[in-house]
Image (cartoon, rainbow, N blue to C red; front, side, top):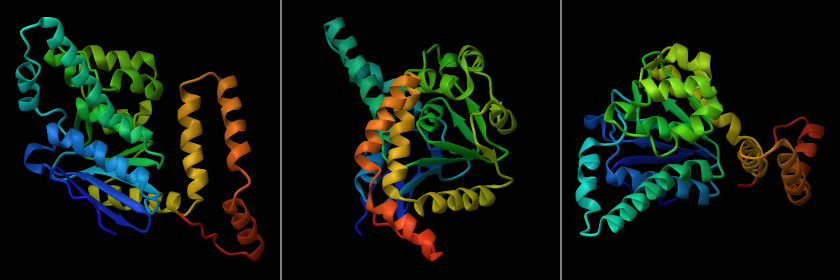
Length: 273
């Protein structure tokens, strides 16, 4: 299979697992304009590629990601310049919405996305990982809503997604103070699922989890993500109605037949992509 080529990311696919790695290690994977766009392109590809059943998001070098590239931030004024102030502000709004969409592509991706985090995960990087299904980290991981220290309101997802992960009180504390959260606290408050002793242990464990997911019915895994995302954003009654409709359409599948046959024959099931 020919994989798309990227300048700021690396992408691989093996045994149903797509690995997307941020690849500006000399800049602590700070997110420049090209990286934002490539993140969307990569996860659109994962979503559209049947052979990709689950994805792992990681960062090359010493840090997972230092957030938005400050040079990109400094260029925004020039990028939106217009003699008419209203048109300039409209351009800024459209830019923000596009950056939001670049990260929301991870959440839209029908396949589960696991974040493997080491070192700094700051500012825009926290927006990035809150879009993922699960987050795992090494003991040196540091998380921070850094935008407040730049006199900014975080605007690409953290303020909307983080409270649903860790609760309103802690999320507000972090957003108002910009303080660092280490891996131990991140696990306690529910920001990450688990801490692993080293980067090697993190990589191995996250791949094991990804392999476990990839072995399940792809149709059912996609359904679980769709139903959980919908239910998170709606009432319990709406969520129950949605899953009833989903299963009315998807429950009676070839994958269900294969699971029943595999259990009867005492073997592992095998599913098409």
